[in-house]
Amino acid sequence: MEKVSFYDQIEKNKRDSLLLMLGVFVFLLAFAWLIGELYDPAVAFLFLFIALIITLLHIFISYNYGDIIVLSSVNARPADEREHIYLINTVEGLAIAAGIPTPKVYVIDSPEMNAFATGKDPQHASIAVTTGLLENLNRKELEGVIGHEMSHIKNYDIRFATLVAVLVGIVAIMSHMLLRTYRFGGGRRDSRKGEMGVIILIGFLLAILAPVFTRLVQAMISRKREYLADAGSAELTRYPEGLASALEKIKNINTGKMPVSEAVSHLFFVDPTRTALDSMFATHPPIEKRIEILRSM
Image (cartoon, rainbow, N blue to C red; front, top):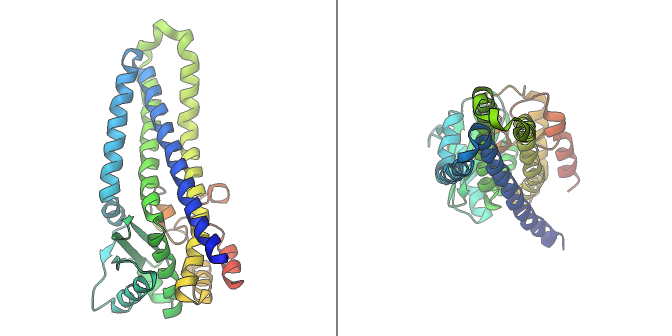
């Protein structure tokens, strides 16, 4: 029965993620319409149509090439078959256990201990790990972390995570556009001052709240998926203590100062940066809670 409920939860998370993605998409269209209204009401719907095309094109490009963009943004390099044979063998073995094609393997030069998976599906996936992770973990601990990332791939979490990173970036750009449009488009609103007052107020509220909204979406999508990936790792490796021990080392060693954009931070095994928003909008569950759950298995 436990196994059935586990997979049921994965399916529920997929449905919830689709609804959240739809919500962000509608939010983007509302943003685009507001920018058009503030700039020139006569072309607001034309602006909305153009924004829709650009957004869909951006999503298409990111869906198909987002993994390349993400890997490049963190300066990941392909794992060397001689230098990183230990890592490559671990990935290959766990891919066989998970019943999926072996992902491409990358290494990030960083003393921080972290990893992430990216791609659009198990057939087009990559796993990247930091040199700090390779230097500080033993084989069982490394298997636990790789098993976690393999579960993200198997459960198609990487598809949603990549799209969320893209949409978060678009919302940030539109927030900036809306504020700039208001600043430089004042002359076009003179004839509709009363009518535009409400639109301007809504626009400002959206521009201010957009980063908060998108951060909440990241958190809602990520937290449950992290717990499920931990459970998936324990199922793959048959040794939950390996992952628990890795998390314990990460908690004690990491500084939270990895130079990573907030737009892709939710992709990582643990949050690569520590900010003032983490207590309220953390995209990862508390490490202590993850260790507690793993050691109760």
